[in-house]
Length: 351
Image (tube, rainbow, N blue to C red; front, side, top):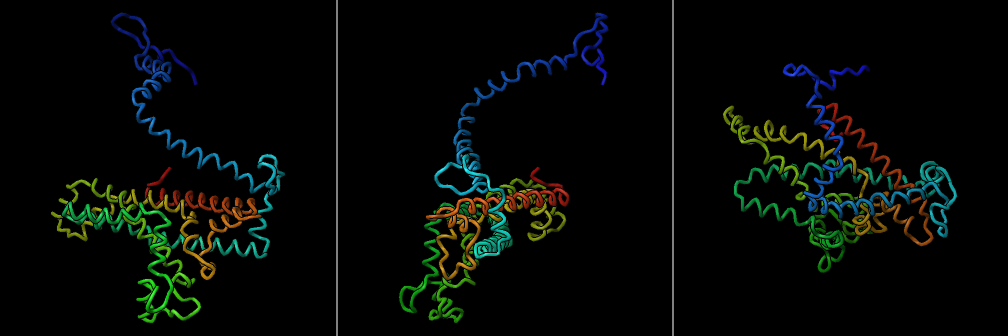
């Protein structure tokens, strides 16, 4: 590429001389004093940047520094030596989990299958509920009533997992027909759906009901809080769109279908991709507090599998790290695939 004088100089007809291009002067000044402008901006808005410090510390301490321990899934387990001094073992842990065919491999595949099933149920039933709630809030005309409904649906999100699982246990706990039985357990027993005298008496003792309890409690806990994003997108819709639809004779259902949903479609796609990214990240805390030996076959997930083998006495941190590594790799591939499909289907994507 040839550089010409006209790229940097312009001819001034009044003086008959060449002078530097004003636009180039501005660009040179910006490049020359770039870091000075950055420092001045930070000094001007130092309060906003100070608020970033806690978030950066959280990411460093709980997101980036723990990545160093992922080396354990490629090293020989040695509780005496640090990870950096342990011998390299290659992909032996991954091969054992996937292809060994022993009881450990069977247990891992069962945990992986349960993780997929629970996550899939959460995506099918848990993801649409915040959208439905946001549409409901948009149709409530009384601001006072809407505020009350929103607060009531937001509150479960701020209840700790221990308290929430305790409430669920109280509702479905096992007992006799007269004392000590949860409300839902007693109702289903009276209806003849469950038998309190059987070996799997109680909803929490029956493996067939664990996933339902997990998903319903998850919807109760997070649907209201998750509706904030969708409700914010709905209230940003221009009122002229509703007026145009009303002139065309659209009723409430038609407005919702042809105005509201298309307007928030980009938000739905972005949130869906984010949800798919965390599809396999089933939190072990809630599962650990709800499951027992009777529901282990349908409740054990990869997180509890890794917690059991990594944190127990005489555990195998290498196996636990390898299980979590595979879980995260699959999650990353799901994000890439969902983002690619969304970009081609709706021209909306994360990147």
